[in-house]
Every structure is written in structure tokens, then in C-alpha cells.
Image 1: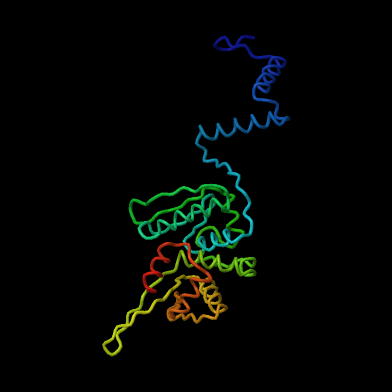
Image 2: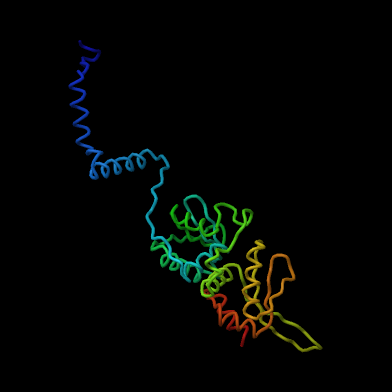
Length: 260
């Protein structure tokens, strides 16, 4: 039988033989090599068709460590977790050195290098981790996807259970959402300058955590506003920087300047 355009209908045997040739060309999907070829072919199809399919990047599972605890603290402060992407946004003018430190911290924990970009419409810089696996790890550590403040935060038990982890987490938290300042007072015409630190957050859980950490060190934090905890005694500020420390050059510089 002859069809239109002189195309002859293939017999069952001919169709089967043609299908077999295509199968051989793509690789036997029942073998490891066949599955590999099929996977590569599928990825290429998604790429050329722009389907939006995302390949999960393999990353090293993070171990419980001071570095990971500090990174979680940074994420609790300046971080945001989405479905496939985690970002840390900070001030490009004052915290660029700390941003570079965070990049190294991410690499130390996950063995991948995040991207770094400057926002043209503001003075912000953003560190971006493109990995659903990393986002999953952060979510397991209590950082919800989306609006983390609205959904609530809770410091992981393993961080609070050990001092070195607890201090590292607090360091990352303060380096992101804290500040070092100087109070200037005039008493009977004489000027007095006092150093202080403040941690700001809209999360009650994080304010409570910061207060409790300082209190366990024998310090005397105060909270005179709803979203800010202060430490105003110079010697106690010294204790904070000696025990907890900072990885933010901005904080260290202001501490050295105001503590002269």
C-alpha cells in the first residue's frame, strides 16, 4: 500500500528493527551506561527547551562544627532561604570584608563557592548559594524557607548544648545584626565617652538567646526597646570580644577605636 507523498507504511518487523536501532544509539536503559546516556540526553532536552528544570548540585553534608554554627548565625541574621537558593545580603560599603569572609565560610562548610554580586540600585551586596541541597540543610537547622521572622526561629539544640558552638552562632548573629557604638555624655560640663554594643532583631527568640548568652557570661545586658539588646559597660564589652569575638572587620575596627 502506498501512502501520500509516496511514504510506505512500515511493517511491524521494520518498526521493531528501527526502534531497536534508536535504542542502541541512545544506549540500553537497562545498563548503567544506558542510564547515563539517557540522563545526559534528558538534561540536554531540558536545557535546549528551557523547561526550568534544575539539577541538584551535590554538596558535602555539613558536619556539626564551629564554622557551621557561625554560618547558621549569619543566616539567622542576614540570610534568606528559598526553594533552590540561599542568600546573605549585607552593606557593600561597611561589610565588604565580612562578605568575603562569609564566602570562605560557606566553602569551608559545604565545599562550594557562592557567587558575589553588587546591587546597582543600592549599597547592598549579596552572596548567593545556588543549591537546593544547601537550602534543605539550612531548613533542617531551623531556618524556614521564605519569611523566617514570620514563621519563627528556634536555635538548634546542638548549638546551645556546647559552648564553642553557642559562641560561634552568637558571633555570626551579632556580626550580621549587631553594632558597636559610643555613647557621649555631658555631666557638669565634662564629656564622658562610653563604648557599647547592641544587637537588633524582630525575632523574640533571637533576642532571648543573645540575652541569655551574655547573662551566662556574668554580663548585664539590657533591653530598653522592643527589638534591641544593649551591653553598655566597657569591661563587659571587653569580655564579649574576648570570649565570643568577631569575624567582622567593621566591628573590630570600631571596638579598637572606641576602646582607646
